[in-house]
Length: 176
Image 1: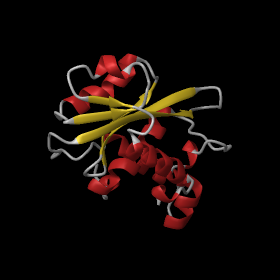
Image 2: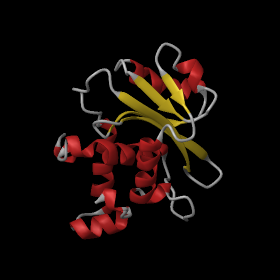
Image 3: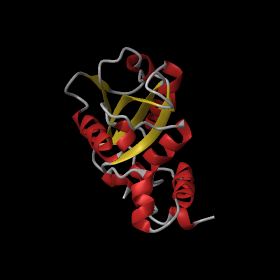
Image 4: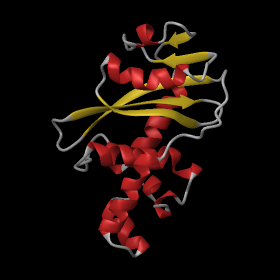
């Protein structure tokens, strides 16, 4: 349901539960992690997208790595766009020993991806750009021209983890 772009009130009404219960379920999504049996040697895309938290003047960047073959996110970071913030994602991608990493032309990536084959360019990260469009469509607070935005960074990260990794453990919210 969260992947259908529903807001929390509509989701709670549809499920017949309270908003507080649904907020707790979403909060449990912050403990989701990507599938552990990812194989090395794949091709990955790394990209970032901008959104707001709290109000329109507070900008945050969502950075994640995308496995092209398996269509799954391998790393996620919500924060700034500095080299330290990008390193949280690129270090996890490097640990998978990729055969190639595609990025856009952002100048911080060549320094972070020195020891592997790094391909940069406007059209090189098409898979993750398509996923960015899907996320903007599915998660209401990521839509560019909207009055809806995430109130807390932690809840935004939990919603993203639910969208990206919720299918690997669909009953995560029932676990204590």
